[in-house]
Structures are given as structure tokens and as C-alpha cells.
Image (cartoon, rainbow over all chains, first blue to last red; front, side, top):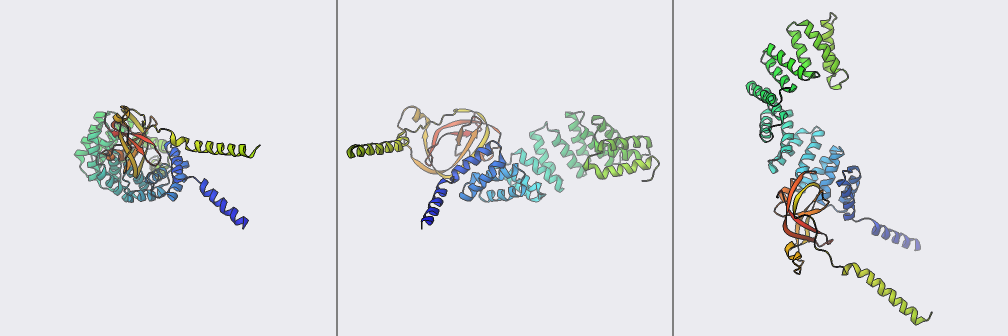
Length: 280
Length: 133
């Protein structure tokens, strides 16, 4: 009897001493404000257990998962938040990122487009959607988004470059060239614009112009791997053996140790070996 | 000690305890939340409380010494904390602006003339309009 009473009292004391949902929320939020997301997460999770109606805690939990790169938890919690009509701009941005990081580009894109219906003027939403559209192969819509962005932020060279790449994919070479020229009007030493033009001329079989622009890209940025690779290939194609060997060597020197270049590097080494008299 | 004096001391202790317990309740609550009437600040935090009981009263009435009546009603309340470490309630007409806030974003604001007091915890806030100077 005595022990039962003791257990009863202890449980009562525990319940009375455990922090309320509001106290937990305030503690979690103090961490959230200081960007201490790892500390905030377990507290926000407890808040959700104690008070499932705390919408701010749910939104902040999703954001905290995003900041700590817990992509799946972020997207799941984010979807719960959207189901509860929590249509905050920051949630659209972060939860779509969480989907994108899980390679769920379609989900990410549909969320971004939903966000754009809600916040049509937001540049971050539009920029991310434009990138995903490009990746998905919807170049026409991607170009139109980048054009809108470029009108709002004309100093952003990368938007102009992306428009040019989009037009190139759509095989609208004249439009692409004009946008690369716009980039060069802002920055006369933009290696990516020179490279893009080189690519453009190569696709149109204007080889000497292509070589000229790849050379300009390399002059502007000596480590421009794509320009080095393409230029070496063109030299080889044009039977300019000495130039090809020198350019392959330069490419190999710069690309060595870069995991993203592995397959290109193997090819480059094989090409160089062949040019120098070995067998590929 | 005589029985009567011990009884007296007990009564005194009880009264002291009662006094101490009610002391905070007797305190006149400040209804002025402070904060600037207009300004600019970076967003540090946000919060929202659906269907919460709030009393709204005019700053001008409070400052002129008029008796402030607190009439509570339920509303969805949206809050933003700026880098002056003050939390403001966002004007009910500016919910779209509230929802599009980003952490760290600099936002201009001005007071809409109201203060707000939450019934549940007695916290008071200046009500502001966002993106206005």
C-alpha cells in the first residue's frame, strides 16, 4: 500500500515537474534563433508530441531538419506543415531543397511552382525553379524564368549565361550568341561566355571561330577544364598535333585529382598517349 | 511560549504567505511594450498563434493617460522578432508580407498605432505594418 502511494506521488511529481509544451517551445526557439538546430530539433519534436497544434514549432522543425541536412525528415515534416496550410515562403524554399537533395526533382519543382503561384515575385523561388527546369530539359520555360529574373537583376551575369545555354539547347543559336555577347558587355573577361560561344560555333561547325573563343576562355581562366578539353579535341580534329599535345597536357595537369573529371581524364590520357606515338 | 501567542504567530505567518502569494497579482501590469514607432530591422525569428485571445488598445489612449480597457477577442496572431530583440505583432492586413519573410531579411516597418496584449500570458506587443517606412 505504502509503495503504491509512493509510486503514485512520484508519478504526480514527475508530471508536475515536466516542462509544459510552451516551455519546451520557448527553449527550442531560443536554440533556433541562435542557429543551434541540432539542439532545437529534439525539443521541437517533444513540442509536437505535447501540442500537435503548435504550427510555428512544426514549421521550425522542418526548417531545422533542412539546416541540418536531414532531407527526408525535412520533406516529411514540411509536407505536414503544408497540409496544415502553413504556406510560408521560407518553407517552400527549404522543403523544395530537401526534395531536390533526395533527387526528387519533380516534387521539388512542383513545390517551387506552387510557391510561385503564391509568391509570384520571389526571385529565389524563380531561380531555383529555373535551374530545375533546365535540369529536367524544359528549356523554354527555364529561359523564360531566367529572362524575368534578368530583367529584375540585370547585373547578374549568370542569369544571362543560363538564358544563352537554354537557347543553345533549343538550337536558337542567334539568340544564344546575343546573350553571351550581353555577358561579355558586362564582363569582357568572362571565361564562361567565351566558352559558351566556342561551344556554339563548334555546334554550327564554325571551327576556327570555335577555336578562337576556346582560346579566349582559357586566356581569361587558365583552369577552364571544359574549354581545355574541347580545344584539345578540336586541335586534334584539325590535325594541329603540337597544339593538341600541349593542350591535352595542360588539361591533364589541371584535371588531375578532381573526381568529377575521372572519365574525361582517362580519355585525355589515352588521346595524349596516342598523339605522342603510343597506342590508345 | 503561551498557546495564544503561538496561535497569533501562526495567523501572522499565514497572512504573510497570503500576501506574498497575491503580491504579483496586485502589481499593475505595464501595457507599454516599448519598441520604435518606425524603423528597419533584420528578421531574427517569427511565430504564429492561431485563434489566440488578444486585447488591442490604442497607443495614443495609453500615453494620454486614458483608462485602457482590455477587451479580449480571438484572432490569428503573427509575430516577428527583429534584431533589436523586440518581438512585434504584425498588422492583420500584412499577413502576406509576414508569410514571405526570410530569416535575416531587412524589413522596414512602422507602428499602426495599436498595442496588443495576450490573455494567456499577459505579454504585450507593438503592432507594426511591414515594408512601410
